[in-house]
Amino acid sequence: MACNIDCLPYELLSSILHETSALNAQDAATYTYGLSQAPEPLQNVPVQKVVRGRVPPDVLLWKATESIRQVSSMWHDWALEHALKELYIRRWRGSE
Image (cartoon, helix red, strand yellow):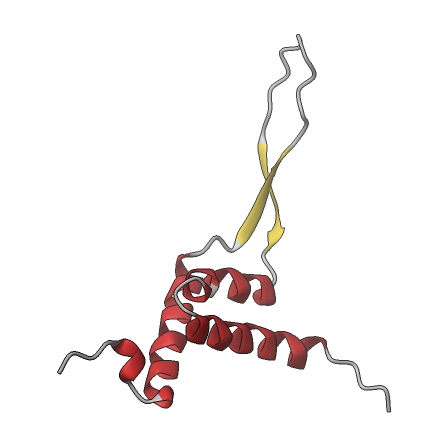
C-alpha cells in the first residue's frame, strides 16, 4: 500500500514542518543590505554595501515558510497558521 507524507497524523506532520521552518530560518539572511549611494549616469562614484539592520523575526519566519506554502493546500494552511500565529501574538494590542 503506497502512502505519502500527507497520510501521517497531523501532529507528526506539524512537528516535521515546524522543524523544517526552523532549519529554513537558520539558512535565511538575518541582516538587510543596501548601497551607500546610487551612482548617477556618467559618474564614477564608488558604491559601497552597507548593513541596514536585522530582519525582524516575523519577516524571517514568513520567508522560512515560503517554500512550505507552495507544496499543497494543507501545507499552505499550516504555514499560514504557523507564521501568522506568532505575528498575531507579538503585534496584538488589546482594546480593553
